[in-house]
Image (cartoon, rainbow, N blue to C red; front, side, top):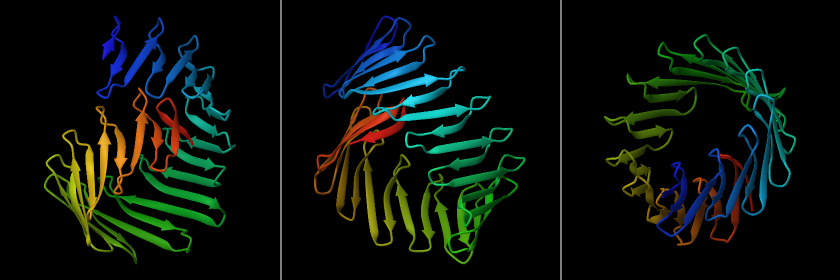
Length: 313
């Protein structure tokens, strides 16, 4: 790694020869990144807020902000606009995506979400919380006839012990009972008239067996606490890891899949059982930017900062 006099990273060289370079303006804001994908340039306003990001492949993101600095508009490559409005204490209350989908959020006095609506799915969710902040009731409706009402009961330690649901598509009511051990691990789950679940753990808290209506699934662990083998009825799975904890092989009854990583422990390839490959390429920010499948299809992933935004093929 190479740094300038101000201690900012200006260069990064990988073992495979790939080079990332970074430039900054006079106040220390990153203005450009050159990596294996291409060049990204950033433009800022007088308040230091990112207003434009020119991405590789001639793709552009633009941003604007309200009077108190909340970003209220994001325009994606292709012209689609995401808009967000905020309440008096800067919480998002209305979000509109490029397709016209409108989502709204209502909060109570302590900031818990009490109502959510989604115009695309016609979903309306209302939630009621108790004095301790635990969710007591939830009501999910997609129409007057498609309503799921859930009620939750807790023990004195705040653990959820009963879930009562009414309004499933078959009009049934379902009660789920949950049981814990003395260190708060789930050991039993009983659905009235249906599936029972049991769970056991080893001395360090790893789940070693779960049974949910069918044959038991057993798990064994390596010294790092990672699942090294799993038996699901007649199906055996073994996993191996490198010294950094990355899973490198998965063997499902003799069908082997391999996983390859770079020096930053980012997965760069999956070698499928037929020896074809899916490969992944990352930008200097560590985010996955390109996926190449065995068929030759390329997917470009676009982010809003570090948050996934969209894919283009």
